[in-house]
Image (cartoon, rainbow, N blue to C red; front, side, top):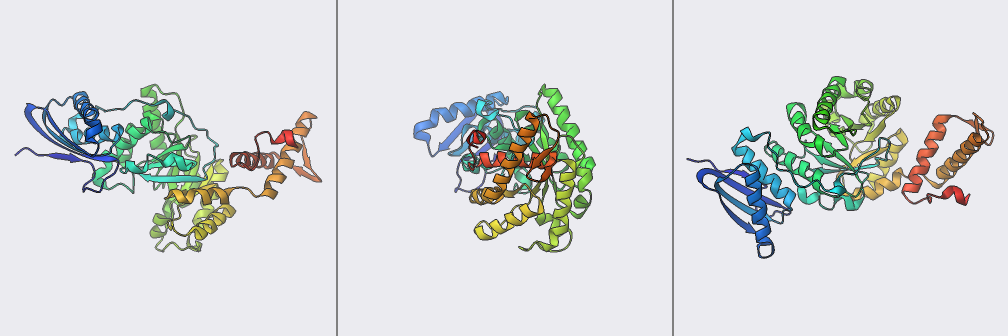
Length: 404
């Protein structure tokens, strides 16, 4: 009996996705399509399906596609998934959508990462408007939010999303899996303008080094001359104790992130609002990151309905030295940005420091003074960052020096 292969989410309450069933056979390929938008786009959908199977070298068998408003990049991903499930030998063949110009913007090493919005890699309906909410970073997740049976589909969807979607200048992050699955993830995503790779459950410097070697190999092979940065996530006691070595493991590390759900489970306790059980771990991470010259990033806050508690959590993280945190819902972005913002007094002090530094440089002085205090270079650098954030969130105009 010939086996039928399937891809796409089960059930009927599906949005922005599709179900594809493929049965290999000897007869010429027959494609049946059922779509909510069939009256308007039946020819477009059929043309896409036929060209996709042709590009994958499939000319026989039968196909049933149930479309629930899938964009072309999603349908292509599901078609590639079902074909590769039936023909694993096609591992080197990819069905790539056009690489849109709006998906090719760059990032910078020191940009703000106050908010990082997690999106499950197998739920493209959540991708489509994610950038409109203006998170500093968008994380397309291939790890914990994706069930094992859907890892291959999520990999294709995320890769195609990186080539297609406009995230409105949000930094483009992907959280990969561990081990060999993670290596497959890197092969899929590195050539397609991923800005930062999140390495989950990082416990040793060797894990970062292995990932770095794989990324450099892919970039060289593909002839790509641009940086791909890393953000290891510490989620265990061993990872926390090795925080400094992990932070220093690659020159492409730009941050260390905390994962408290796994960490608290690893040390045999539960996560609380007060956070006393994780104070040591969070402090270790902040100090390791600062010692390595990279950003410390706090964990997610999981209660999306409790804004007051979220704000309190952000204030505590900021007081500990964190630069940002993860979020699991767009409604968390605005409170996170507001709480990480500098207050008016801090901005005024930063302005005084910058103006004093400019004056000292203009007069050829090596010493910066604000009032009776001497200011060293790290303080000036911190003031510059405060001003950049104040301009970014609209507290100051870019031309603020002209108004002094």
